[in-house]
Image 1 (cartoon, rainbow, N blue to C red):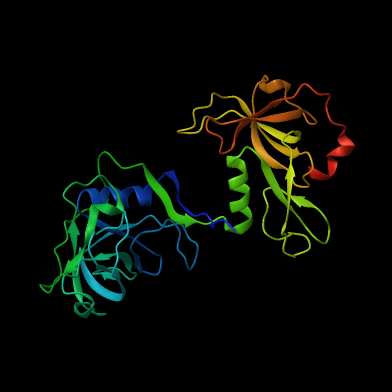
Image 2 (image 1 turned 45 degrees about the vertical axis):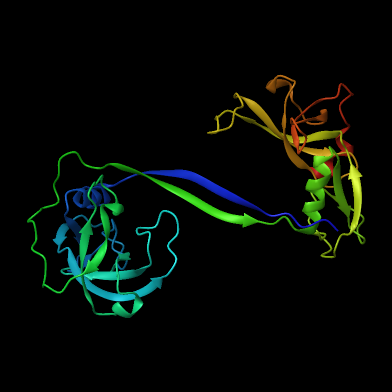
Length: 314
């Protein structure tokens, strides 16, 4: 049996959001080295500030400056920092109740003395980033501090050139292993063949194979070569160009039931104007340079398949 494949994968996208008046003031304040909270009707000061009281659900808008010093209420040691974290050396994640606040702010604590130097109740202060743009990263981290409470700036939360939106990159790095069934499927694709697996109970052929029948819950070991031709069952027209994808819009992405398969897979349709793609269209793969996978599917020129032959695969 061939070795099971594995490969590093990255899922990444920029998350863009606009800010309301409370969050806008908070992030603009960080840019100006001011920490702001918001006061609730019952007199509590929440840091970081929120726009609605988590207890009463009332809208909040009264901004209050708090000190850049505070007390650690709880912590956890991070011995192996990951890419993009606040520090590139071991540090502690801490919840800090800033002086004047009633809630904790989560951030990193630079603790050169290691985990033995960190404890609940220790006093800390903000270490500001050298360059600030109006983001939580304007607080570079916290650091130990035993010289009392930092002085307030006297800010009322009103600033010029407010930060009105942020872009937060979201990224997930992981190692993916397709398992026995899909490893065989990928090896077959390298030979320009499409291989599925048949359920020993219901006799359905699944492509791509899952290693087990999703209906019967039993292992699938019998390999079956299907296609390469198939039938478009459903499709959508894509009008928004994806970043780093060199395909001009509009284009069509479709579910394709390969001949001999009982599960439709998806693929791009090419070689035909997008407005001529239709359910029942017979297609065949056009392989990418060097094999590996079909780049897209194109019409075969055959008559359209009868709806009754693929209606169970919609």
